[in-house]
Length: 178
Image (tube, rainbow, N blue to C red):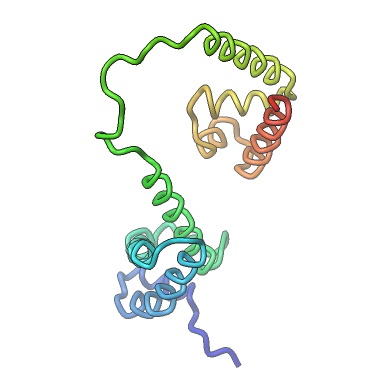
């Protein structure tokens, strides 16, 4: 006999009724697991705690976005946690404004300019060598500055197909450029 609560039912109670007791049960179960997951992925204890709190706040605020036909509660919660961890890493890598260079930058020397021009030319040839379906998605994603979801909405293709084609195209480009 399984004594686990029905996590889906609890999220739906949070979604439909703002049920604090259901949220408390979800929090008690998932918050420590999310924190442990984040720490195992390399986050400090304080960052893991902060992200876990943020994940649980997101569960409360965005319970309406949970779709039990697409994922389990655990999958949904840990996907949110993974995304928060990625966001935290990106934020940590961003330079602080005082670390950014100020004023005009020096002109690149001729060798750098030639090397850059050669790289641009090689990249253009590598892009032209991609299959049309992959090239079109790369252009939308990187030159059109569209997210994968925006491309899916625009093209009608499934999100997984878009991600797969872009990943394959990037692998081919990486191979061509090395």
